[in-house]
Image (cartoon, rainbow over all chains, first blue to last red):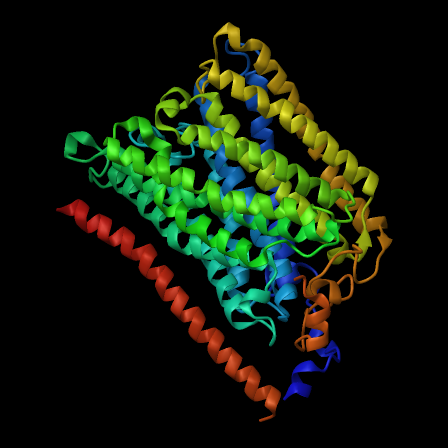
Length: 535
Length: 43
């Protein structure tokens, strides 16, 4: 039996891949589907980024410059929906598709046809969502949080919005089922749960979160739909309903959603920092338990998003303290990443640069989150640009930099070629500088009282808005380097060996670069697992 | 059936069982939440 499980002859007969459009439309291969997810996420990142550029263009000066307020509100709403559901979540699923089978020693995802369906739902969902720009009444403008009664004023776009949210939710749930089933059933013998790479662990926990909370979003938007079209009054006070109830239901989904967006980034940083420190990850088990603790706590903090609605003091105290509690496992993580680097032999290739920027800048987002958790202070910050600065620090130099770290880390493995380090360094430094120019002044604007989601503002806010807009344009332009770099890498990168980075450990680095069409047609041997073990 | 074949079919069974279990849990959450909310809304 041991012989059966350890022999490593390649199975070329599995390598027949369909050609042309059939390869992509009928794709069941985890790498092909991963690639499609990543390309889709990249397209959405630039569409959502385009909306962000228009927002910053309008806010460059006080007064109305280019857009009417309704369209401005559509831009903010669509920017958020596109970035969260169209760019970040599909990017994580793409990385999961590419890496999880390779990291656990499996030939593919457990449910390849379901995988195809999960992906192909997305283009339909986003075609529907983007089409709302062209229907009477325009795109949704009530904010990505879809609070009633405002969102119920949406025109013909309303049912399109609800249906597209359902489609996105269904796609995420199907993807999550696939991830859980793959990790729980397809691990090679010898890859016990506590020998899995951190990226796999964080994705497993993310998948549980997705299955737990996406149905809550579906329920909430369905109630909006029936309020709008079928005469129910879930959120209409005149009919005995309660609009605040929507906020509770939405944020019961919304806060775990924040961790859905960030946990896989924790996993990637936990892979990248040990590689470029040439040391094993400090406190592997503590990292796993901290991730699980963060996921658990994410279910009991939702009302910190709505302290000002008027809730009992006991509830405010509970949600304030439970929110602050998240700082404990997060602190464990930041400490462990720092301790991993301590006395390490550090080098600063692009994945490490993005991971380090993540470490510094995500922590800033975490600290402003703690400020927002303090109830009396939150009364001042609520609905100001301080909140905008906070969550953008979490989501851009946090999540987006995490995705960039992952792509720059594994791109040589995927393509078999090394990308231009010069171009990647330019991409990093321009992004790291401009992201701070873009978002740091928004703290000042918020503390000075500038409200969010407005196209116009008082003249005293002009200077910092100009700085922020210039940062935004710089950040946006810098991102254009990314597809150029990838194109150049695929076309003319220098071929590399199995292990692109000297300090890299893990099963994926035991495979050739690029890996065969099916990754581990026979499970890796004990010797290979031992060589690849990162801890 | 060879040892590899037995192993593979056992794994396929495990995958199928696990996939169904998670699909049922997800569907129960997804539809259950919507149906319960609507039933309550009709009261």
